[in-house]
Image 1 (cartoon, one colour):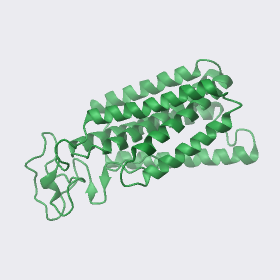
Image 2 (spheres, rainbow, N blue to C red):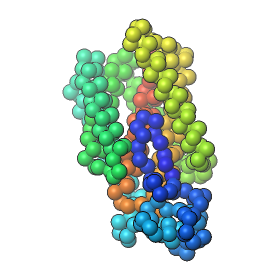
Image 3 (cartoon, rainbow, N blue to C red):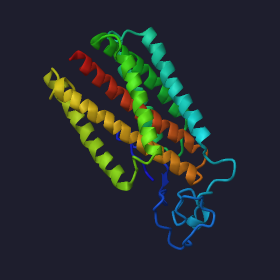
Image 4 (tube, one colour):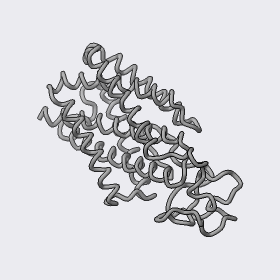
Length: 288
């Protein structure tokens, strides 16, 4: 199943030969059932990791050789490593730089992180150096940006944003595990369409702010800013649900162990998105 993040069009747990999903039809020429399918999976589902030229249903979910398949431990360890570098970069930049005076350094770090993320998103395989480099630069940006908001909106907004992000993560994880949230193709199309509209509105607002001055169209300030902040957090929660689905599909269908780096990358992108939206939302609410 392809999961799309509106910030970066990253390659998820999918391949051109098909989509990993529990209700996907079998490939032409393949048998109708898979005698090796794990309990609870659809035995007719196609496997994006099946070797080329082989009936895919025969291989699901054991596409990768034993010992080289992605596991939950792989995802957790690599996500911890990536997020750890984000936090470390944020702490160092918070101490070393001034949020207002050194804002240009933060923007430069953000652009660098964006470039690395874009390069990774267009590569066919994950490159740990790119993902970890992105994490460091993103952390530098977040540290400076957070201090800027701390100076602007007052002490406490950063901690509130961190706690809010952690709460959203825990809430989405519980909702996903209990199947209160079901990531279907319709769900993904709706989230992607909403995210595209959200980003386009933010870009238009930014352009008006840059060339017209002030707050642009007001989408990121006042009452309207609070509404858009809530929408942004909800979109981030939807991204997390799609990331959880990616991880679940990758483990179920025997994804190669290296794909756990993509899972860590996706989860980091979604958490950064939620934190930034939460930080702005808390700042606006505290300002009121």
